[in-house]
Image 1 (cartoon, rainbow, N blue to C red):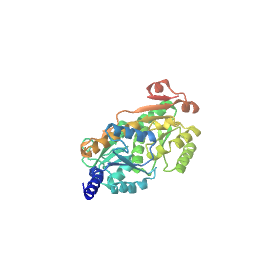
Image 2 (cartoon, one colour):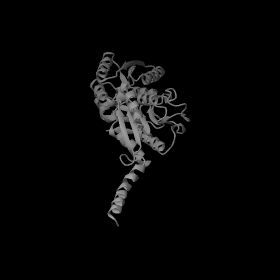
Image 3 (cartoon, rainbow, N blue to C red):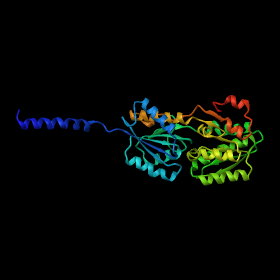
Image 4 (cartoon, rainbow, N blue to C red):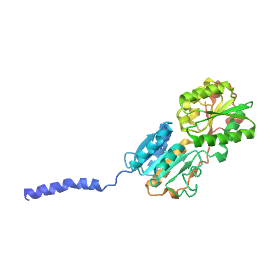
Length: 326
């Protein structure tokens, strides 16, 4: 065989892998954006459900994250970055991130986790038929009276409580209004006074507790908010320091020393986010995926914190707890 022929054959053989690689589809990218900064176990839940759907990070899917860490004004820029990146799907949690994603694109599929009614927020046309480019999970449902149940838990633990405070974040306006409205209605039903206090940064949290002490609040209800979630250790520490019985929204608060929580499991929420993201990567359309509403809620009690506050935990309360931290 002539030398020129050999060179041609080798050159062609060397080009085959390059051509094969060029024909392979690009790895899909999931754009994840959060209004807070979720702990590792939540992202683990998301990745596990994606893996069950056949998508393993760094093998056949990539995840590109944008975390606002409670600075909600950063969310529109983050959403725009993911749109320019042309990600395959945007996973957005919770409400402020979902709203920013929806404002940024009407074409890229969005899977959200929100604490407010997604229909009222304008994210979907209806829960059963979302109708657009977004669907997801609604995990704080005011209609179920969760604030009423949390206030009831506080009254059961502190029977003499007549003045209870509610902490909300004014920078998360839609959620703050919903929590305030829900708590006010629940308080009226059981005959207690509600003092609404605001905080949107760490210093304001300190100031809020100073107000609670000055006003002699008997107990505290912390509203659902990603910033509060990111500051859960500070909140639990201040509540213990000032001896204020406090109820929170999710188990991660009692896990770091908070008194008790009643709400849905965020791990379940993140698993569902992964399920929907996987289905969309396989070709499903958000318009055809109904919005999932949380149906399972858990009561978690931190017994050492109760003892430190000098509270006798009623046996009826302990018997209803899904978990008691000893």
